[in-house]
Length: 378
Image (tube, rainbow, N blue to C red):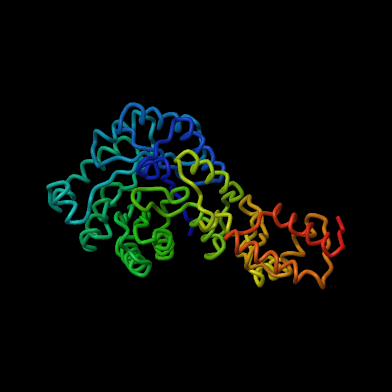
């Protein structure tokens, strides 16, 4: 089954508190997403205002390979703004949980079902591709969701977006729920997951395993509150864990992530899964020895695959193999019977500094050590 990624960095990602993308940044992000081969780009909310509408149109006018989708409240007036901005595909969203239906909309379930019919009628009369979202579906009654989906199918909706709006699902419950919805309705399902409990990516993958053919992502996991499922994590899980034959150009993932991080005023933490620098940075003696012999001993995939580099660092946890490796890199040779003494010096200095040594600091230490033992091989 083909899995389609619908990236919402330019919509839900920009809803991250404090994040504002300029038009130029949005265009650059859209182009990079398209360069990677992302299937769909949720490019914004045209009804949010003149500038947002013009930004959306600018992305449509790029003529990208990706399908460009406009997000809308389930209001005909919103959809009109999207059509005016050049949208051929739309997401329309209505709450499905009783708490949101009653306290947010001041309506009831019957109103939801009747209202979605009217909006879908309008969308299909205008030949739009329509993804129909169920906001807060993870807190909704599943029988009501099924009833809602049946209405969607009857009135021409192309797929249903299951939203874990407040991130309360776990992967096991997500799998059971999506499988039930798929079995009961047969509709194409999209999963939209939030990371409030650190489970956004896991829930997205569980949804895919259960039969969802569309998945929402954001670059570096941007999004409201704790964010959404990370694009880079989802792609690499599909490829390396699920064994999917993905054709995304993953060598550009780091470039895209760095640009989005810069544009959003965020940093890519070194321990970030998939694209963090610590993914391919090794210090521990046992690990370094294994990586030097064969990187596959401690790396799930090569750094070159996503445009990154491997790094061996010297510090408190280093072993002799790491020292020899870095020394060789800089054209230095220390007698084998003296490496242990140099390692002791490294560990003491690293402990004193409370961090790794830079390559420059290590080589300086090694030169002084080499002169001391009278075996300078520079």
